[in-house]
Amino acid sequence: APHPQKRTVLVVVLLRGAADGLSVVVPHGDREYYDLRRQIAIAPPGKAQSAIDLDGRFGLHPRLAPLKAAWDAGELAPIVSFGSPDPTRSHFDAQDRMELGTPRVAGKPGAHYQSGFMNRMAGALGLSDPLGAVALAANMPMILRGTAPALSLEGIEDFGLDAPAQAKSRLEAGFERLYAKAQRRSPRIGDAGQVGLKALKELRDVPARASSARYPQGALGSNLRDLARLVHGSPALRLGFIEVGGWDTHTGQGGAAGGRLARSLDELGKGLAAFREDLGDEGARVVTLVMTEFGRTAAQNGSGGTDHGHGSVALLLGGPVRGKRVLGQFPGLKSDQLYQGRDVAVTTDFRDVVAEIAQRHLSVKPSAVFPGYTPGAGVGALA
Image (tube, rainbow, N blue to C red; front, side, top):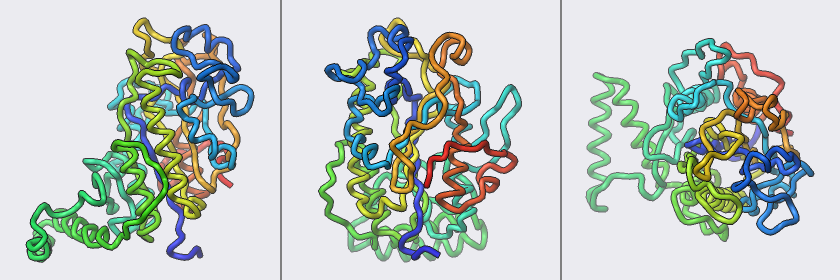
């Protein structure tokens, strides 16, 4: 068995708002892409502010240049035409069904799980420590809600009792007595309180660490920094979750030079590259999956943006990833290749990739993560 200090970790980064897959991983080899997006297309490699070529057909958005080192090292694998088979174009429905793992397929209702798929992973891993499954988020996200213990916090330094230093230990002792009493009357409240107090004590023991990694300003950078600190300092950590908003680019999406999407991708690229650098040797046991609830229309709209679509892309990063390959089947952008004649098709179901990571990286049976669902072959993403 692996050394308890060196257990495998999965990090999921959810881009809320429907990130435009065709700008993240640019199909610069497809002429239709340039016909559909005359103002906002990313230029083919070799021109100023152009796509960073990966394999002759696909390239990264130039603002994701910090991730080229991971690609060159064989630790980055984009997955094209990735997403949920659910036909909804509602952000909230799509996010909930993705996080629960309950997409509707071909008009049939989705499965009825009461928990998020990462919470089911936590249960299958037998996690009991509050730092086993952590969301860097203001509220517990759907993906980690359920019966297995999980923790949400806005930041390691911000998590604690808001009281003068000299009063904190007295307050903590008071809460311990309170929750112990509550345990007898309402086990759920008692359990939640005990988890919070245990987390408080354990987070105090996670060592601060100096790192030369340069994270971008803002929530994403600080959340990734905290997560790297937990990977290094908390042997209990197996599952991490981060959410990033701002991807709903109906207007002013922009191309390579500027616009809303370029700014978001700049932060994402710098953040993920700093996270990889900060992990150092620990990156050999960490897989990061970046995904979004659905993609955007293949054609630009009249407002210099794109509208709600279907398929998008995912990014897989980490030492265990069989990288330097663009994974998935991309059907193309001709009207008869598009979903409903307007969107990128989904040819890789997100559940198949999550199931593959669960099995190969975490040694968790896919049936524990998506009961009743039989995953497809996956994309062969992990060594």
